[in-house]
Length: 473
Image (cartoon, rainbow, N blue to C red):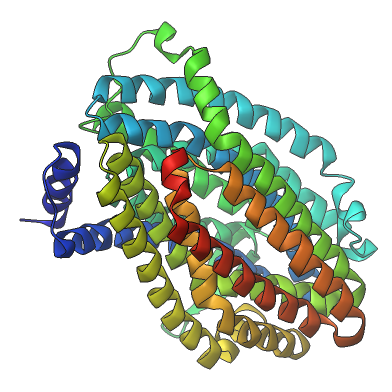
């Protein structure tokens, strides 16, 4: 039996109330995690590609993207929270065997999140001109940074539909299609960037000069290339939902089916609003970190951005396992199986810690090569390697926080975990970074981050062990 068939069979056992052995639980977790990890890695690979291609243009171009990275993460995270508010409801409906209601929630979610993303696009476009100045960016990088964020903002509705469709399919247990689409999106990003970032030029192909057309848009080309790749991926995922998905097929519909209902909106707000608020305050902390780093100079801004992007290659497997945890916890609780829910919670969290622990070792060893791909500037490379090697020690505990959060999201228990994240980042990371940065520079900022991630992982493990998240769900 192929992996897709095995996954469907094991998920059906959850919905039907039949027992799963421990080996079957681990097998199902792995089957759901692998494509989810591929999806997450594809997403961060796009940022890595943008940083690497733009990095070849010099430190100023790199810094202009680095300056806006926390702001793009803020807007993207709010769109993701909006999607999760509806997809978790779908997971609970599927766990209860109510596919008709699952499709109804999906339709309503499409309308609500699209409207939300249009509002976000308008806000982002409106502040794009002033944002680089607010963040303390040097005059020389403000124009490129502003245009980068403007293009990103205009394509937020495409990103929102990408998030929603992918999240819905994952919560139904279909990890394969979002994973394949993510890989395609990454490949398209390379192609679009290749023609949009660089000017027309001659390249050597098998020793022969070949003319290669290009738009020569630089930083703006990187933003547009990524946006076009996301637009293509969103179109594919929506087509699959409308025409091919066996459980969530929404091809037979009437306009009124897409009208959001109060009960569904209230549940979406209950799940998504704390996540959105948390993401806002965390991003506010990230932006404050950017403000702390900005006075350290262009090299530090670029190195900080590259190190964050490079570290993402290490922790994205954790987010992939967290996606699998959300699906497993959501369907298990929807089926009323609390003992199985607790078992899946422990399996996913400790699997995440093991995987990210291994990734942390690899990140420490290969830090020079990882950063070296992204920039030829020696000063940036030295700072980036230093940051990655500090952060490598925090990866197992970071995994505990990431995957445990995915568990709590699957249980629709988001308020307390959001407060925990808020306290950890603002009270521990920012305070320590502000204290250490003046004397230690960028090194102090990353030491503060390492200490905070270890603290955050500890409190998330404590909450997981106490089990109150399951009672409130």
